[in-house]
Every structure is written in structure tokens, then in C-alpha cells.
Length: 361
Ligand code: PMP
Image (tube, rainbow, N blue to C red; front, side, top):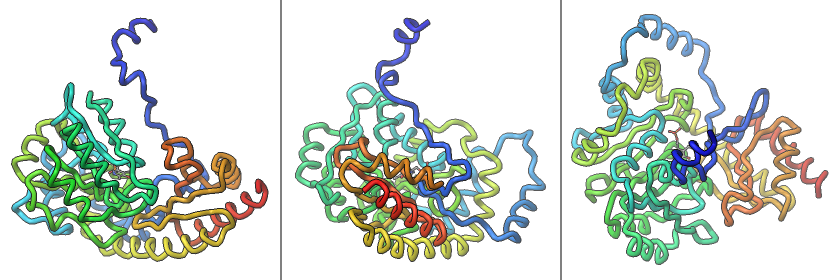
């Protein structure tokens, strides 16, 4: 059996681990950049009412027309651009890789960056080219331009702001990359709700620029809905890689409902931004911790040398789950990534970190 597996499974698939998510039952969950706030009871009741009339025996609207309209209206996307929906933006990354991938094709991004760019490149049979960021996590422009020249990538992802570092790259550097790229450049704005600038307004300035967004971080991670915006000719091609009915009935109806209440999510994301500033200040006062400034809903923290693993475990024992990034990239040695939670959750995290630092110090 093993030999059949060895013989048939592509070596690049055998070489990678599956994407695993840590068990979080009963824990304060600060590991996955979710919005910690739920909905008021009345809104939940209203939402459940909208589901009452649904039938599940039929396939969903294949094109998600109502959802397209709702997204265009709430996000201000004009008729000159096409919109493509994905089962999370993860699925859109996969569709993009399937569209331009193949032997000899390369996907370029910046490291440390979002892990799925590499993972999906490998699954789609593309070679991943990761260009290291500078020590301050800014773009190393000469290195990126040289890599573009050398590797001629078919696809480039720039996360704006970047995960897991939390910073927003210099937009002039990004423009230089878009102009130098021989292929598509996707600006991944998963964390758009937590920052003030966007490339959406620049769509159309370059024929190879696409913008990708998700509703996950604004407070709808459970729906699994991402969207890609860009020129019609590109999106018409990418649409061919989309599986039929990829956005299920419940997601379509629930997202349309939620977008009608966008003001609630705007208020929640504002609260998270304010809480981010308070959490940053609290982390900065803890001895030996170095939090990096963030434009997203998480904060990357460098811990004292060699202690990320024991601090992570100590936090788990105290019921707080964060992400341990130590060992995932040379630039992330000793780093933890902490999602901004509610004021109570953040206070519990800071208390737990303080005592863990004392205990293991
Ligand atoms: N892009 C970035 C930069 C991310 O950090 C994430 C999630 N962690 C995603 C895309 C994927 O988001 P989703 O699939 O939930 O839409």
C-alpha cells in the first residue's frame, strides 16, 4: 500500500503537512484573527427568520447574484470591474494558481507571509519563490525586483497589511512591483477593516492588478466567503476554475443579510482597532517582550530568546490560545502572534503572559 502511495502521490504533496488547526475548546481563542464579537440577540433572531424560507434540496444560485449586488453596494465596487466569489479567499488563491499555474510557472510572495500562498503553489504544481522581507518587515525592493527579473513569476501575492507581521507595506514599493511584474499581482486585503488605505481605488490603473478581500476578519469567518475584484478579461478566465455552486445557500443568504447590517461590523472593527492600541501598550510594558506595530487585528510579539515554546504552553495551561510562529521562518524566531480579542480576553492574555514570563524567567 505504502509503495502505491509513494508511487502515485506527487512528491510535492508528500513533502508537505496538511493544514492543521489547534484544538480550542473552552479556550480564549486568540490564534486565528477572528472578530471576537457576536451579534445582538435581536439581530440573530432576524437572521434566523431569513433562513426559515430556505430549501436545501436545490443547488444555490450558481452565480450568487444577490450576493454580488450586496457586495458591490457595500464595498463600493463599480460596474467597470468584475467580481468573483470564493469559499473563503483561500479558494480564490487556489483558483488563481490553477489559472496561471503549471510546470515551470512560479508564484512569488514575501516571507514571512501568509502560509497558504506557498501551500497552494505546491498543491497547484507551481514553484514558490519567497523573497525575504527586511529585518523591519518592509519590502526589500531591490531583492524583489531582482527576483522578478530572474524568476518571471506568473503570479505575485502582496498581503496589505501583511500576515503574520501586521505591517502595511510601502505603497510606492508595491506599485514598482506591479509595474515590473510580467504576470498577475494580487493585493490581498484580508485585513482591510483594520487599516485606512486600499488598492481598490487603484484598480484599472494597471491591467495586471487584482484586489482580494474576505469577510472573515470583519466578523463572518464562519461563512467562508472571499471575493476577488478586477478587470473583466482576467476574471472571466479565472472563473473557469471555479467549482459549480461554490458558495452554498446558507452563506449566500446569510452574507446578504449581514451586509445589510454592515454598520454593526464597522462598529465592531472600530472597537477592535481601539483595543489593538491598548493591547499593544500593555504588551510593550511586559519585560522582555517586543510587540510590532500592527495595522491588522493581531499583534506579532517577539519574546525573550528561546522562550516562545514554553510561553505558548504556559498560556495554553492558563486557557489562552495564541499562535506560536517560532521555527516557521528564520525571521520569526521567538515570535508569537496574538489576535486582538475583547477587552476581557486581552486582559486575561496579558495577565497570563505576565505570570508565564515571571515563572519561566
Ligand atoms: N489572506 C491573508 C493574508 C490571511 O491572513 C488569510 C487568513 N488568515 C486569508 C487570506 C484567508 O482568509 P479566508 O480564507 O478566511 O477568506
